[in-house]
Amino acid sequence: MSAHGPSRHDLLTIGQLADRSGLAASALRYYEKLGLIHATRTTGNQRRYIRGTLRRIAFVRAAQRVGLSLDEAKVALDRLPEHRAPSGAEWDGVAQSWQSRIDEQIAELERLKAKLTGCIGCGCLSLTRCALYNAADRAGAAGPGARYLLTRDPATGPEPAGGDFTE
Image (cartoon, rainbow, N blue to C red; front, side):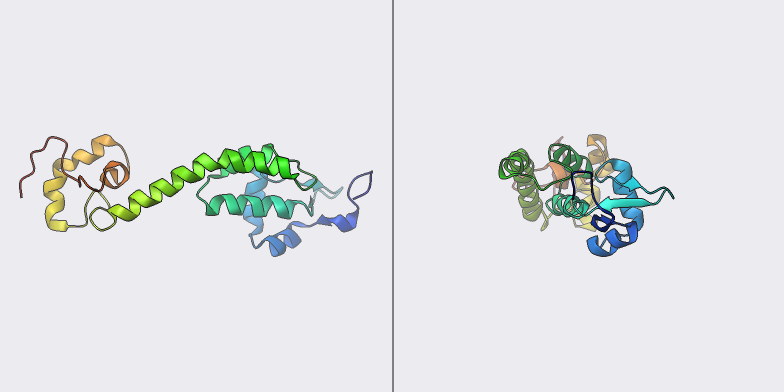
């Protein structure tokens, strides 16, 4: 890149970026809409991306692989330089900010692993016991999703809060 900005050889079309990144052009436009990546426009209003955009896309995909949302990836990207590779200190700052989120993700996966043998869906794998454990969909009052799976300690199981279950 020169002092006057990137040369035309340093810029990628959306098709080239799609090929290099493995993402569809529609996904790249969505990333741009979210502010994860940025394009310049030609006089014909065509998008052009600097090669460093590939690094930003790889960063977003890595964030998603460890369970971070696109919003969380954007917060991290906003802390990093757009037109150059981050320094070690800049990267360490982002990595440190992700540490607690990754630890939470690991803990959530460990809880899920422990519960998979007994709970799924509304709270259990058994079609015969489910109506007893979760009569009248009491778990639904706790919020959306598989409430027993998301909130119960695997050691205590999916018993109703009122303790009125008898087997």
